[in-house]
Image (tube, rainbow, N blue to C red; front, side):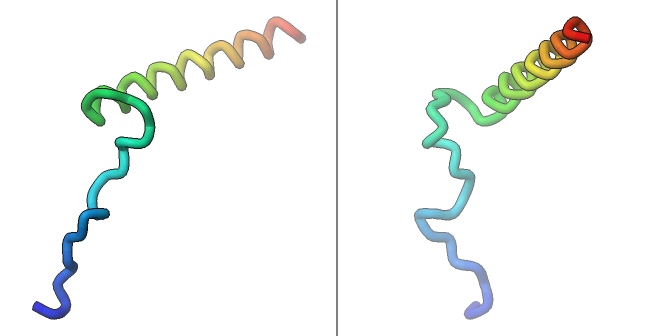
Length: 50
């Protein structure tokens, strides 16, 4: 028993300070969509500036 990890109040996912009020899975999906949109915009702007 001495070698078993002890759960403290600080164990677990730290996703309350991010400002998203919802489930973590919903936040991740939204974040992925935004990242993809931003990437597409960067690629579009790099090709139009050439």
